[in-house]
Image (cartoon, rainbow over all chains, first blue to last red; front, side, top):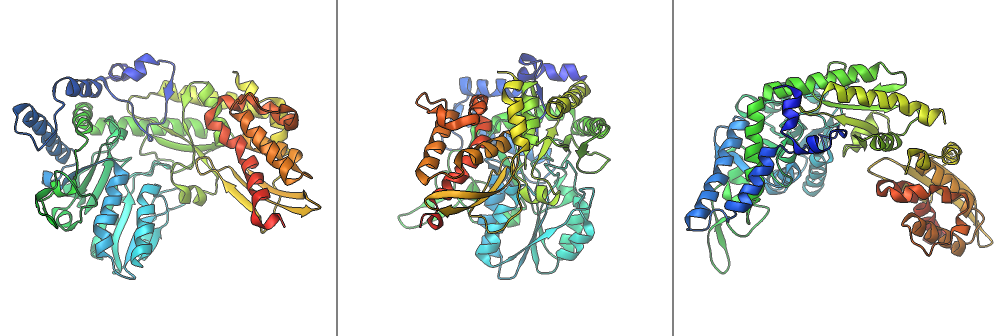
Length: 403
Length: 141
């Protein structure tokens, strides 16, 4: 499929042809098939799942559970009972922190994260470390922004019970060497949690090959609606996880003083779930599978490399992260122009980029800056849009500095 | 609204004049977590007046220009005068018709910021900082 064919599937891109959307790491646009699936659900299949006898609700339940299997296949997990529906990556990680490690960390046990984590994969661990008197340690990054495996070897010890790490940095666009990191962690009998919020949209995830204990991602960053996410956990760990929410749909039976919870996954999904979100996620996975995750990875990587190369040619523009790009995320700064002013200039020129700390304040501090600009591209973006951004950056410099 | 309305020459010039002094023991330190705008202030309190401002500020043009205007407007003023300035600037940013523009001096050139909700915080931050400073327990004895 060529770029225009792909773009034709996205109503937002067609309705706003002069708008350049480069904030895909924040959220992605939705294809017509996902939008239609939501409409169809509300027109024909809007029934609660798992509790009704009538056949219409049973049909919806089947659609809902079919998505659990589809997600399992999407990440090559062995068993769909390992798939928990959440509201998103943040909720998934918090559920692991507050439902599992809260009960499994002793004084002086270690949690290891990297300095490049999104706040969602940092704050829950800061909190648990404080509550349980555990130690939080950091893996450093190299000068080019890639993960420093020597640092990982030093900070991961036999005391370490969990290594929580992002697969793709939402600022630097780097893909962390998870295979090497998981090997180090498992040598010390430490569990591994992967924050796949930026990885799931762009790269093929293979749970059976990687063998992490946990993995979390969000639907809305991969064409699905907001408010739906996935937590993968090894079954034996999920079985020991305490539900962080109690209520409907999660119980076998209840008496006046106590209850018996269902088996996984249901015991960890209290309340009416986000059915429309699950249905939308199902269609989003179909769409991604149709393009092919390998193709998506290649398109995003090539766009990231192209933009990196073009930006690097401009005097006074610093681009962060390695020269060899791996994803469509490119963060940069322009000398003497604050990212916030640059983003407003680009906004007036119909280009949407992110300015700020991108929910990764320790990393921006490490880079020695207050904030950065971030262009994050997805497979529906193209080089023409990159050229337009570069042209506007050049014009911007005379606007601010020549004024 | 044009970009040049937002980034007028007078705004760019005042942003360049923004104080960024090195000092310790600030009374108030505020930070905008989404963009990194950052301001630290301390000052002397003498004869009911706030004097000798020391300000360390770093951030975007709108924030830096607003910091320069804030300093010019608020220095050597009483707590009540400063509160009046902050209140009126806040009204000015939200397009409140009851605003007293006279006491805002050159800061009225920031009017176009009021049309950009995402940037109002940039202009407000120095005014919030001085408001907190004059209302802090340590400064009113």
